[in-house]
Length: 235
Image (spheres, rainbow, N blue to C red):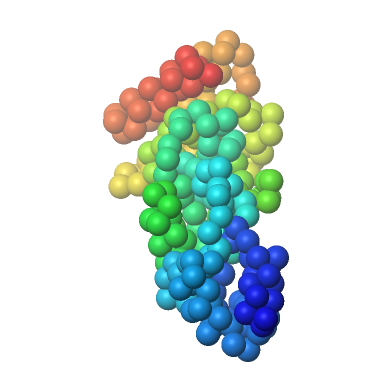
């Protein structure tokens, strides 16, 4: 009787989400024993040391991420897909968390489901984020800087193109001025200005209030130009 009551409590509180033993010990002092017994029956499944979940059907990884109760932030190219209408579709889901154990649980669960999660751990998540449909998602200005710094130029300029009326350009400038494109001396803000100048030129109007600038790094310049061309062509 106690086991079935515990099972019902789990289903009510944690269906669709990862949880750890200490999360459910308040429901019953014999939680660890009951989880072991339920796992033998397949009612719950173990995903890693001290972590479990109740088997559930998910439409896709986004469905799981929205239902899962752990603190996480969708970041970088994955966050970009929410701002630029999935301009470049990827099956990799990039997340940031502030709990090492939870990081391992997410990665282990994703492997069981056949999904590809890349999870970054921080003592304090360094990305600005907003809440969208039950998920914390990296804010557009922060996301543009993150993508640019990792050479994901098309993702970044697609955000600027589709969200040109929503992006706080002054905030973007402050965030991008001191960040550099990985393994180069090129500042993110310089590349953003160059790309925005090209967008203005391609659209035939001064949508982005930036001064014309040049990019000395040939390879960065070529890739920024390719990204802008792609956004204009397929947007």
